[in-house]
Length: 232
Image (tube, rainbow, N blue to C red; front, side, top):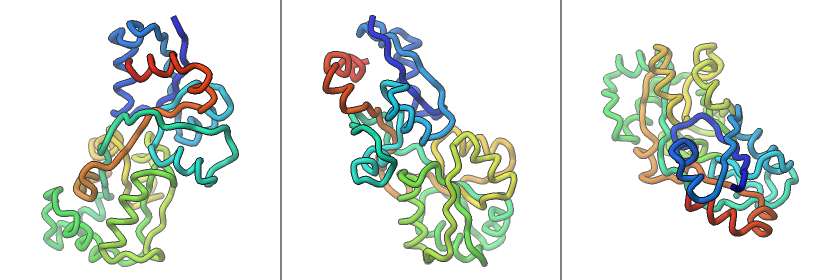
């Protein structure tokens, strides 16, 4: 049995890794998965780079950013498989929800253009938006969608917030809106502090979201283990 330390964040798209361990699929491939819960995406990247974990559940743009030299100096990382497409949700504070409903927005979750124009009309100052990381599909969705909806760079204040803390940041009025992976958008709604405005798929039909990332030296020196991990 090969032991693998695998970091993950508590999001719906970590389910393939958890199911592989809990239902024995990993063991069938000769793998003992040691799942390590992380609090932030940068933590997983840095632990992977330091060799403290062998693989990580990670935002797809993160290893791309590393390859472009946009992150800290770390050993080369490789994205070896996708874990999810989509799964993001855009939410707004209940105060903004009230203004949108008063202006006649119907929250039908399908028309990104109409939602963006309604949001532009409801905001008088800068819009503070929480995203899980600066190298993330969520950030790309927000920039593209709000830019097309009439928001300029000066109209947007983007703030990095770890997914489990997104609802708390909204409750503390540190942000006005967010784009985050599930279940944290629904968690904010259940707490009564947010309203869902759009799914990410209303902006981009099938956005690449999370992947399984390995250090390149791990993949090169233990190809059999890498293949077994992907099959599991």
